[in-house]
Image 1: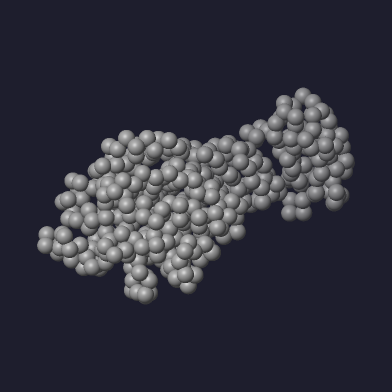
Image 2: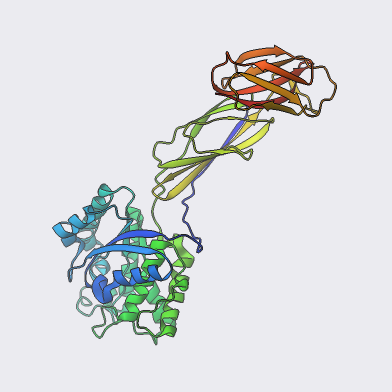
Length: 423
């Protein structure tokens, strides 16, 4: 028997815009950048507007850092309060632009503590970093110590690099608000994204953040949103189109998560009867495609093939809303010798059966028929009957319930083969 195995891992994301209502539960952890203009509620309004639902909570004390949240009882209690689909993590607005030495000591260890807490509470929770932005004219207070933060561009580049690095090493998603802001600053400078302090978001700035979050949480096109808060429709539409271009059209660019399931299986082939053993260790559900138009959701199915040939068997496993596939090609030979090219058409009824079966040939060729053989799923002959007509009745009451293969033999060839279920 020849087998060719091909391993394909596909992280699947539902991108359809025509869908039933989707409900997501999200906890927002951050500070005033998250609290301004009630950002979580804005995301909820967008979801409601497109027929979805966002259930949310937040903890956003002013100026809070990951260092503070990692030991904050309110934050930790809120993480443990539900099986969140996402937990949004926003660091202090300046520290993500600081030096590598600073971040190694003051940022990354506490981000890791928060992420561990999130995943320990519920293994399917996805941390999502809230990528913020550079200050309107750079960080004046730290410019003398950290030269790259002296300009918006330098500070914004550093912030983006930090969030991307954390998403990569901790395998999270990103809500890339800073990238949407960058596009708007460069292409639509008439839209004011900042408040007067040159740091916090204006309503338009928070709307851009909400578009980024909405897109990443629901994997939906933000251009479909018609809720504009109190912004002029033209302004809101420009922001939505920017989020579509930067976020929705590049969803995979902001997703650093890993598929948590790695499907695999073995098989035992006996004539046309194949017993599959699923050896995947981590999955919520699975599905099989046997390559002949049939499928199954059983853990370890047995399948009978009606025809000789080469079939591609695909096992798809699902875990935490993501899926992966593993495929093999298997070669099926239904005969112990050579199968006649002009096979008879055999009909078995009733099927399933319990005690007696009738077998008919729907297109008898007049060739010599010798006997009927019944094989179990291990390829063993459990019964054999002499038969030389085009219709016959057979007693199968002594055969245990199960799945079987019936072969019609003539001139040392298999003239036909069909499945039989006994109950």
